[in-house]
Image (cartoon, rainbow, N blue to C red):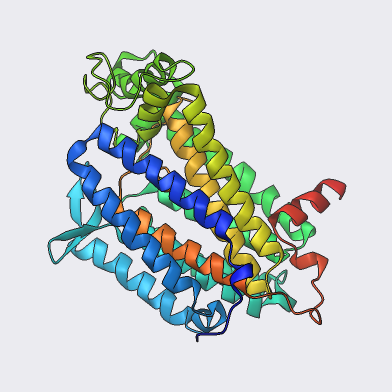
Length: 390
């Protein structure tokens, strides 16, 4: 389980990027709600310690328990459905010893671990319909349970991570084109049914958010649209360098309470207002660096399992960052997604740190020179490049 690792192989650049981003998160959360700053700081410290501990555990040993991890995922999601605490129309949280947790955040990491091992074991048969069907079924069970909470945004996020990992594993382009030929028309049809009919396909609040994005001028949805409008104005008001942390401007997003959940879903609005364009750009660059380092570590992984886990973590951070920032800037429908390592949310924060610990361990284990890395099992960047050539 524990091995002798060389300190020179430890990815200190990735660690530094995570810590700097987390410190910025602590400052922004404190500015949004000072009562939460201590908890966020404790979460960062605990998460960083866990990351270091996990980084010293052989990820291959962890992957041996993939089916147990899958079982834990289903058990946690079932627990949410049975005893979940309702808030804002959804039951996504459970209380353990007086601490409120959101199991879906940890389940993301567990599912990435599971499918990294699953695709590695099926490497020779990735493109058979039997493997595709089995993989879709295994992904579908937890996705349905998450959708029942209801939690549409995490259902979509995990689905996209699953697709990204399967693509990275080496699914043939012929199969990809065949699947797209079926999925795209179905997705368009589903979208039309949601937006053009009254069929109860999604919950009312979910449809309201979609329609607000499509028809912001409609008075029926103006209250929901106001959140994003205020967020965009807050970001713009920061201009180049921002108004400064904990500013006393009564018209600010924090002091004026113009945006709900500013410490979480709309933390980027706080960053835009208080740190300005320069601060927002710095946050985006740090997130981009973390994603690139995940993919880079995956490209140098010892085996396909390590490669896929790093690709999955990179996809997770990229997707959540895009969704959170997109919502705050008004280019995506309003949905509650945390900005990785910045937003308040201890379950999300600690889960991400655990995932990054596994990424660090993958980086500590050099690729065996005797192992030929097949083009079909290239990482996300490599596969994308060759897809363009194809």
